[in-house]
Image (cartoon, rainbow, N blue to C red):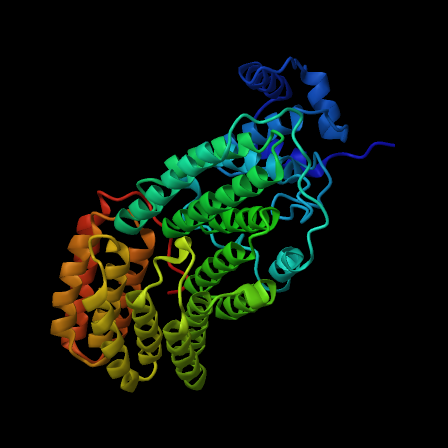
Length: 469
């Protein structure tokens, strides 16, 4: 006896279609994509009753409901394929990876941003996150299934793709994720279509590595503009691609970005777990520069937890490992001396929120970071350093100086499409507001920040509400 498809029925009710309207929508989209499908209302009713439609109907339904609801949905979310592996539980043998990438990027490009900004409740956390990423530690038994036809690109074409990705990374550092995110997702969609074909092993590995790099950029940009769940999904898919490319060092970097995302949304313990996973998966192949970078993630997480001894230990180790580093892979070029000092300053500034005596240490590191930072190339990072410095001034009770720095930061931040930048300004405003109960200058700083942010908000897209710093 067939049982009803409760997941499909749920989205059907939310979508507001009639059975006839949904049938017509599937027919229309199918024809646009070159498929000969023409269901009628009775067929839709059978799907709701539990009948499993054949491909490409599950993909078409996922795209239609995703566009209707403004959410990236996969067939699994509609109960049209087995729930395991789901869209963020792709098999670590590569099975389903390409189709999941295609579905997710396609749905993402159709998302209605205003409906989903600020969503963090759907982030996978805790033991569930560890379980879903645990396959990163297992040996790869086989490569992803080969495509049905031979691909026509070679190493020269992949090098061009990698050059374009490097340009996108530089744009992100200068202008934030908001301005170029959709272009990156569009490029990623084109990349995933290339993976449908069959290639020699060397080209296949290089193509998966390039896709991993582009997916981690899509994840980072999504995180930067407040699309936290979407960012986590891209990071997870990037990790799978790095696995297929047999590039554990790139996978380590992906996990480090996932860790920083977790600190930002107020989950420092999850961040520490992700760093541990990165270290176990990378093993002896992790270089000194990468290890230093991971240790700075730990220092920020420990600072959020208020563990002074752990912060001191992590900052010290990061510095020692950085000094020993002989070189670094190209994708770690952002983590230079300024990046090291900026993370140390952020860690001690975070501690100073509870214990103002650490403001002096934060100031020293931030001064060094700002002196060394290439502000024309790393505009957003420079803004973060200056916001941290304003936070130091608040901790020191120098609210007038904090206001001067904050005015400069907000003015510059208006040209950067980064929700995280304004998240940190919001956090600074909240700290000033708390101090304002005891200090008129602090209350004035809070009011000034409110006015400055409001003055720039009209020219910026909607952004996520901060859940952590």
